Length: 391
Ligand code: SF4
Ligand code: SF4
Image (tube, rainbow, N blue to C red):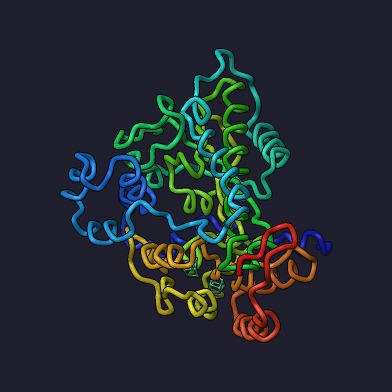
C-alpha cells in the first residue's frame, strides 16, 4: 500500500458504528423541539403568542429554560465593526433557505446514468462547488424530522412551521463536510470562531442547493438541507454516508477534519452508489480521551459512559448548557472542537497519526497523553490581523 492510500485508509464495516450501540428503535424527532427552533418561536411569534402557548402546553419541560434565554442568541456581541463578517454568511444561507431554492420540480426528461457514474459526477461537482468531504448512503427515514421546526427564509417562500415532513420517496442521501477555517477556530471561545462557523454554514447552503438543483435537472427529485432549512438530522445521515462517526462531543468526528467542520445534505430518489459507513476507531478513542469534556466550560459533554437516548447508547451533549455558555461569552464556543486531538491541519504527519489513532488499542491512551503534552499550551490564539481586537 502506498503512503497516500495508507493515509486515506478507513475501515468500511457493513453497519455504522452506532448500530453496535443500538438498544431499540429511534423515533423520528420533531424539529420544533430543537433548541434553535424554540428560540425562533420566540423571535417570530413572541412568548405570549398562540403558537408559543400551544407548544408549551405540549412541552412544559422547556418553558423555564426558554423563557430565560428569550429571543437573544447572544451571539456576535463581541464582534463590533466586524459583525458583518459572520452576518453576511448567515444572511446568504437564510436567502438560500427559501423553498424555491432547496426544492423544486425535476426536469421532465430523465438523464440515464448508472449509479456509479451519477455518484462520481455528483461528488466531483460538489467538490467544485466548495465541499471538502462528500459521502453517499441510504436515507433512513428515522433521521427525517416528523415536523418542520424552523421556518426561515424570504416571506412567502418558507417552509411552514409545524407542517408534517414527508420525503419517503427519497431513498438516498449525499452528505457534505465543510471545513472550518483552522486559524479562526483557534481563537475559541472568541468571535473569529463564529466567523468560521458562519462561513462553513454559508458554503454548505450553497453546495447543497446547487447540488440539489443539479440533480433535479437530471429529472430526479432532490432536496437540499442546510442550516436554515433542515428536514433531516444531518449528523446520523453523515454517519450513514461514511463521513465519520458519532463522538463523545455529541457531533460528527471525521478522520480528515476531526470535529472542525459543518454539515449540509441533499436527499434524492436518484439511484446512487453508496460509500457505506466508516469505522475510524473513534468509539474506542473517545472512551480513552475526554479532552473535549474536560475543556468544556459548561460541562455539557459527559465524562462518563454512554447512556441511552432515542434507542441508541451514546454520549449525549447537553445542548442547553452549551448554548447558555454561548450566550454568556457572546459567540459560539468551539472549545471542544479545537481541543479534540483529531482536529488538526491535514498535513501528512497528522494524517498518519489519524490512521494510527484509528486502530483500537492501548496506544490510543498514549496518543491522548501526547496530545495533551504537545498541543494544549498557550491557547487561545488571538484574532487575525484583519479583525479589530476587542479583547
Ligand atoms: S461548544 Fe463549548 S460549551 Fe458547547 S459543548 Fe463545546 S466546549 Fe462545551
Ligand atoms: S476530544 Fe477526545 S473524546 Fe472528545 S471527541 Fe475528540 S477524540 Fe473524542
